Image (cartoon, rainbow, N blue to C red; front, side):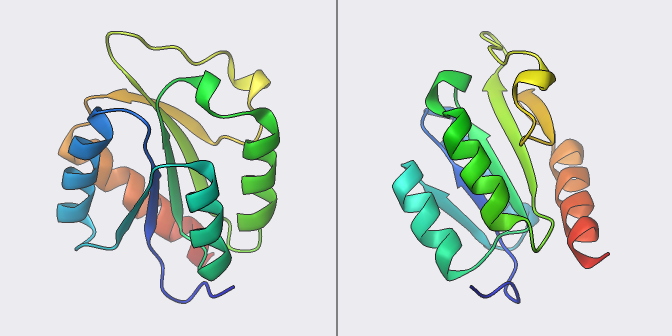
Length: 127
């Protein structure tokens, strides 16, 4: 695995993921990869570890086993993993039930929030 070419991995399983992708692409100059399935995400991570992973959709889409596998795989780089849900149906259960996730966000994300998220994730991986 190569961690030298940092990028953002957006694991998107809903329509709003496209808008998030467009916003992220502008912020990180096209260094965003969108995976439509957990298998596609794992294959990408095996090639290169991202500095930020965004899981979009409802918590039912992401099994605890997948989140645990993801956390273990990206652990050497210190990747930030956040979950993103839509504002009209925030559906994440309490943080204690998702120890592998660093934070939870609700769409729509402002440009400022996206910028801070990316800056924080990059800083975390360089410590």
